[in-house]
Length: 161
Length: 119
Image (tube, rainbow over all chains, first blue to last red; front, side):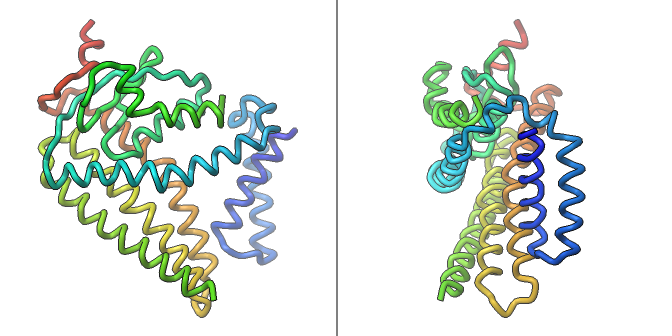
């Protein structure tokens, strides 16, 4: 039951923020759309209802979003901007082990890696991500993991695992 | 009181986004092949698109006389978040397809994926 409520609340909030109005017509349309969506999709979107009862996970997600968009992204952007100017590149595809278990955690790690300039996930096989890296400083998977995805995985495990 | 502050922070984000877009465009021209160009494209997608959209939403909130400012602010913010979620999928699928089809010629330092596929 809780999962339907949470999905409904999320969809309804997004709808209201997107339309930016609380006119009666918007509220009614939003209610209808969000109820239909929550009934039809909640059982696919939520795998483990127990995790929804731990709001600390949501706080971690908000903290991670703020840290990611400011500190981590800025560092990666400045690195690639420097390489655009100096053309100091050493591209390659390296193996990076991934320890996160759930599908959502893996998606978050994969999206975070790809969203930072300088690293793009090309493929995933047997608990390894294959990462296209703009400057291959090490070919050792564990060392590569330290500089590419360790921080993302820590947050992803706290949020989704 | 808070409105001018929001407007100027939004404007700053907007201009910073434009600068990053320009740098990304230069990178796209200068980088030698598809796989490296993807990284320049990522700059254009994150600080070149997500950041200015957040800037627009702050600017709209900072202009009280603007009609429908909540709609502009809300739509820009939600679009920024959605872009942050879906942009990596596009990059990943492009890279995946390019590697599978072997249509890009390049000289990587190391290519573990090709090594593992050859096994």
